[in-house]
Each structure stands twice: as structure tokens, then as C-alpha cells.
Image (tube, rainbow, N blue to C red; front, side):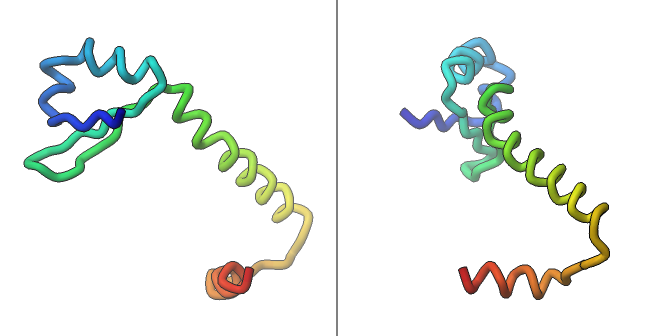
Length: 82
């Protein structure tokens, strides 16, 4: 079940939020009724970002091996055509 809580719960009910997060579920925090941030476990965060880090490392290696450079317009145009 999605957990949406006021940001004050991070201070006032930290153990409850920690239990939810360590189960693997994110907690969405609101401030004045609007989304403010998401709290998640380090493992879930790593799952979300590891592939990105690997792709960025791969792009860095490719850039070192080639003089070819593309503008952001060229990249976005290619992505739109996929």
C-alpha cells in the first residue's frame, strides 16, 4: 500500500517510516498538502540508479575512444524516432 505522510512524520514518527522503508516500500512525504520528497532504502535507491551509473561509465569509455560528439538536438531527435 502506498504510504503518503506529512513531512513532520519524518521527525515525529521516524521508527514507523523506517519500518516501511526497510520492508522495501517508499514513503512519499508531503509539505502543506503537496509532494515534497520520497524516502526509500539504500537498496531500492541502488536498484534504481545502478543501471544509470553503468550506462554513464559506458558512455565515458566510448567518449574516450572516439572524437564523435552529438548535440542534444541530435540525441533527442533519434530518441523520438525509436
